[in-house]
Length: 520
Image (cartoon, rainbow, N blue to C red; front, side):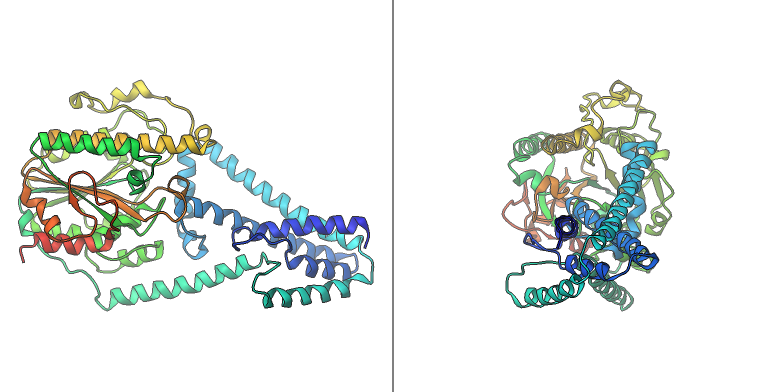
């Protein structure tokens, strides 16, 4: 072998080893494909066939490299491995998030740069194979392929492998697709067989306003992680003190969410339906079925049902399937202040608008699902809570903070600062909730605050609990105390849930809610 061929082979091996980083728990020193490809291309005569095969290999390499990078991103953002069978359904949502945070031009530039990098990788890989073949002696191919076969057998036989294969990335996706297909089919069959939660009138809530507020990324790590607890725990103590001084009763607990880091709508439907929904496919199946939700329970109880969705900025046809009497998206909420990156309007405006425009004028009891988004990434800027709620009006008061704070692209270069901003954003959301409850919750109000999921592993660390936090607030103790008597894991009086007990799965909430308030 020449020095040139050995150097080229080393580069080829490094490129292939890089494909194994997300597929193995050890660091291999050799990719099995290296010897196979080296021997194969060295055996081919220079010409059209060799060039075409090199191009095919380059395209394959670029595709697998894309899967590896996306897998790492998905693990860091959603706390699970890449699953193409599921991800294709949310590609549009991912682009929308990129577009909202970076703007249309920068989002397109990022995508074009990624595409250019992939083309460059594929071209480099194809050229490397052809150059390696050119510098390899003619007698070498048989030896290389024989060595590759022997090494593969040795790797399979040893308890601690000495080599790995980037092709495992493709095999992993095929296996995941098959498993996901089977799980989805089983889920669909269970729905069709009637394994559902039936609609029940909740007589003990007749005449009461029921407000279900989902707080973005309010996970248990905000309380248990020493990076966030010093800010969030005092906030919860202040919440408890303020609400007790107002004569309000407060219960807190934990719910295990089906997701982490994103896809909040899966958590929302899990809680509302009483079915465990952890993929976009299950979400679509459930929406297309006749399965009822908590919304149907409240309608049967006599409530006017509304959805307050400040993050919805595009058509949301599936929202009609939920059966709300009215859905209020960002355009329907009268906000005339500035947007704040992904956050179309701050939580305090959402609460103020809801109280003034929906709840106060409603002639009948209201059930409202509210999506509270100020604690959604990128967590910049952090706004102050306004003392005078009556001054919020149409949101123009927030012009003071227009273009305030740094750009998300700048903040996210420093993970420690991102984490600090996460806790500040969540602190803001909880302070606003405390203020709303202090001013507007009474005997005829049941306020339920639920964290939709934990933030991304970048914030929580790997293998963190999937639990989120829930608070139940009312001036009427009969609406709060039953949650304690129900013996639910992780629930206790006050603003702090049991930090040592894993919460109940989120899909159980609807059944518990029905049992408590149906009067049966």
